[in-house]
Length: 236
Image 1 (cartoon, rainbow, N blue to C red):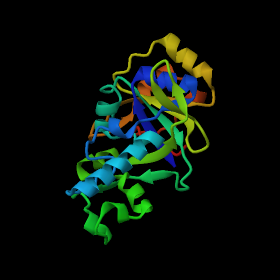
Image 2: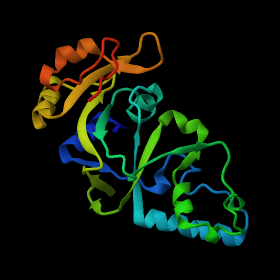
Image 3: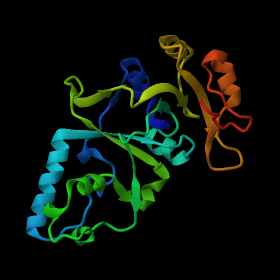
């Protein structure tokens, strides 16, 4: 399956160069109800929930991607208002990646047939970390839990190197991107196996499509993403 990672131009180019992605911490997620968002209302359960959240925060991080590249909101929120880029990865659908379950009510302890949070089976607690409020459903998010292993003391972040679960195949540039010819040439030479395209807003629908004119003008044929006449990406 293909997954899409939205980011700024600078961070996207850096990720391609370093062959790694920044790992998000649970306490940094942009949804405050994320990170085991179950509702509890007594002291014992509140403490047990806080302890479980601390364990996740200390031992693991997440990498978030989307199943779509064409959602304008993703470009606006995560790709620097269309000035950034979207990295394209091929991932193996073998359980490493979780599809987010979008819900309209916060789960409660009693929903799991137990009286206290500590009695909820761990696999159910893990599944709680992949539930989000339904208004985030436009993201079509896929999420992967990873260990906190590669720490970069220069910028105080953890990173995860590209692996067989996320093989970089190329990238899309936002419709407002400002990438120089020198940068683009160096990027294309960096790894000739990767494919690229520029994007634009769709003309008849609210969706992002390939800008065929700019892509043909700025990217050589053998490193150009294949697209249909309507600007949709064809099968890889």
